[in-house]
Image (tube, rainbow, N blue to C red; front, side, top):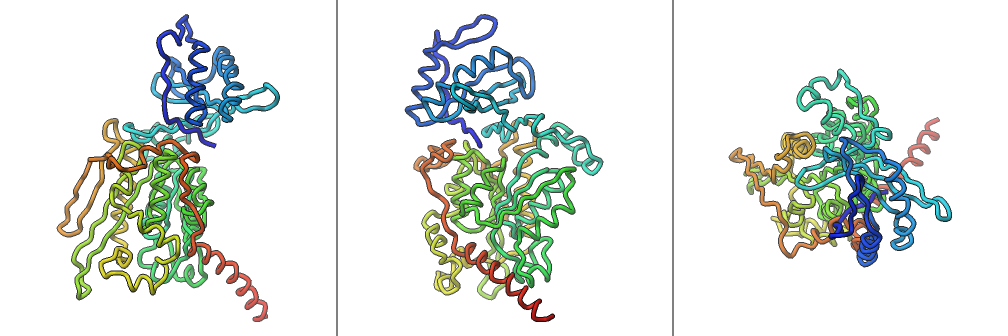
Amino acid sequence: MTALINSMAIPEPGERLLHGNVSVTPAYFERALGIAMEKKCGISFMHSHPGPGWQGMSEDDVRAEQAMASQAKAATGLPLVGMTVGSDGAWSARFWQKTGPSSYERGCCESVRVIGDCGLNVTFADMISPPPEFREELNRTISVWGIRKQQKLARLKVGIIGTGSVGSIVAETVARLGVQQVSLIDFDLVERHNLDRLLHAGKQDYLKKRLKVDVLAKALKKGATAEKFTVIPIPYSVTEEKGFRGALDCDILFSCVDRPWGRYVLNLIAYAHLIPVIDGGIAVHTKEDGSLQGADWQAHVAAPTRKCLECLGQYNSGDIEMERRGDLDDPTYIQNLPQDSIFKRNENVFAFSLNLASLQVLQMLSMVVAPLGVSDVGTQSYHFVPGIMDVDQHGQCYDYCPYPSLTAKGDSCGVQATGEHPKAKGIRGMKRLWIPRVLSLLLRSR
């Protein structure tokens, strides 16, 4: 369960009383309740403490928030969220849940995630998510940015959407960086034509029709450097409800998909659910005789205060319906598309994927461990011919873009982005039929 903060109601003159501690007037609380009811959202009550790090609560803090909890729940239908900021900018938070008639108890949040010009700043409740101790396996990594930033990086829940050529390399990299939890979201099977680009996949994987997420999950467990490493394979498309919900349980997402519907869903997540999405794509250009003309790839971050994926030109909303219908997996439909259609560009090589994966991971590191002031490196575009990098730091969406208005709206944003994915559903049906068939052959062979 996540609370998303999307607007502030600052105390007006006379609504805050200073007397050693600070208290607020009933008029201020009632005004905030009125705003929340008008916006159809809940209430988060924030105050500051003079100490650094995750903060506990004084008796006065508990009494103040407990007194607000019942009114907030009655008026908005949502639990009160209490928040405290420390002297170093670290936030702590708790939900006040109803446990009985006029009885409310606080439940500590696991973490608080802040997205914006600061990059990605996450504060963790050490009692729930303890900071990992120094490990010799990570000695060289820690020597680069220090143990405190490594502890922050390690506890991020990283989601990788699409575990093909780029996604598999990204997954291997974050596992070796010491990240403790990685979610892999992909419905597809390993196929023979994947083997020149798919890290960790081999001949037996496509012969036995193994899922990409299962093959990659098994390999990551061998190479991960965190002491307590968890990998969660989710064999669904991010456009399906189970894949979508799996993505929402992450702190940061890597978009390694090449279809419009997936990018559309991830774009919504980046703004409505405040989870930054690191996206990338490769375009290979060939001549009529089949020889290489050029190749371009780019990496960027979609998040509030930055340009969204649609404004970056990473997908066309008009193409989403084609994928929903299953047209983009119909060879006849693809064959009849214009020769220059982006859906006919399926050329790629492992070396290009390797470089794009590296750029995407570096985008993440710029938000998490880089010095202050360099969290937004802009859109990085590499041109294989003639071998140059362009950087675009103009990060604002176009005036007509709807996504900034959806910022922090979460499940109440009013957009139904998920649905039945024809190919994903077909693969799951084939897997269910294929396993009994194999068992039957084994029994007959006896």
